[in-house]
Length: 154
Image 1 (tube, rainbow, N blue to C red):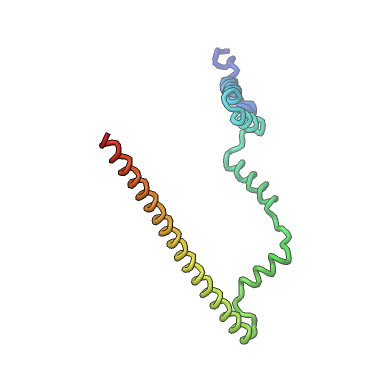
Image 2: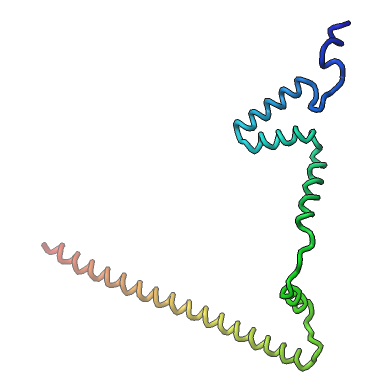
């Protein structure tokens, strides 16, 4: 018997975790993973205990699990009514559709007018702030000139 055949790694028989040197490195990696950041160690341990599935297999299993949770959910009556109302623009009644269109146009015009008034008011307030700031600055400068002139005469 040669030393090569007497070696435990020369048999080419791999255990579930691989030959001994590989197992020791994996266990070391798990320990180091737990030391530095426990989720890494936990993930390595889970991967080792599940028999080293390929990443594609793990991804497919995760997708199957998630799809079980994302199954068909019961839809409320309100949601169904909202979807039905938003899908169609016509009620089937021409008079009502014309009325609805006119009201929507009127509301849109009011919204635009309100936005314009809001912009005008914001500009007015800014102008008032500028005028007040200018008044305060002018008062400060006048006071400074008056106090500065008295100091020069002494």
